[in-house]
Length: 252
Image (cartoon, rainbow, N blue to C red; front, side):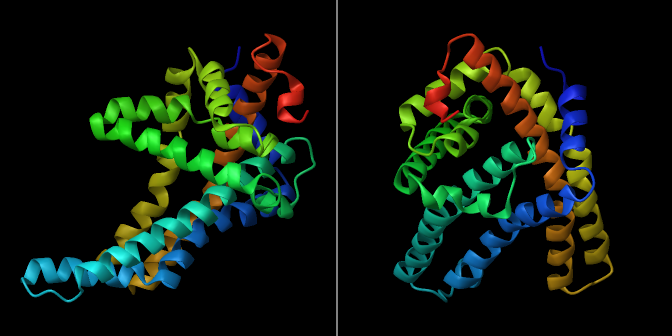
């Protein structure tokens, strides 16, 4: 049986000392890439003009242009961000055994890239569709499939159907505890948000506020990712011991 205190304590040990800064750099990738994608596609600027046009009743951007920028933003997230997430999760699993390297961030691009992208997209689509029904079913599905990126980091070629099946089995009866574990980080995440509010009240430049929030979250995320990795390792070992999954399926 696992407990919140044990997995968080193990996570702290896994990123203690010199290993923290490597974990920080890996976490920063996920924080920075979405902003880079937004900048590359011009998504943010076009979106702002679209909203401004709707408010003023004077179109500043043609609907086709607006849809094109949004489609480009979505596709880049699917083909770049999804594999990166798998790589980041894989790094923290390997880091637990002192084998994590920065290059692990790109493991989702090296082997089974197409399967990683397709499985991640379909899984997030399922979660999104359930969320459209009601928030609670969406949260339920998100918790049910929370282990999908970890499983793909172990075996990027494992079929999407099997990955989701294993994740469902691993989280069966654990979703409430996993939710509580995730919620226990809210206090940490509120710190950079509170600082950003203070900066906005002080009329600080928007770029400075964004940097503070991004940096603050990047400092916190290694602890969060390492905690999820600890949980995954425990649930993976239990799944193997109980015959839910064979080690060979996960490349172990």
